[in-house]
Length: 146
Image (cartoon, rainbow, N blue to C red; front, side, top):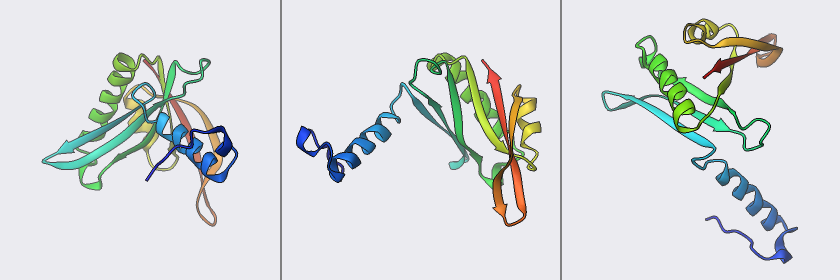
């Protein structure tokens, strides 16, 4: 159960801090700042992603894609490309964004997938992802101008 702590007396309390953190998280899920896209095929969930916009005025013109995934059985079927095209259109038309960004793991061939959809590599964080001891991967930063 979620309850806010409206009085000033509890604003410094643990309950008040948790309520404030929950309020911030819930506010981040609002339609002005976030969209969840789902792809289905044959009645099954085939893929999903989340588009988020930071409300700060300096960066409110671009959004970030999070949790871009397709189910293993749906890879290579065009589901991911269709989901990405829908995300592009929704970000531009419904959210009024000018640019999208995302981060992908190197060594997976994903930069080619996104490149074919118009995304450009804009940077790398070398060794940012440690999959296992001795298996560090770059995180590739990509952007799409809308």
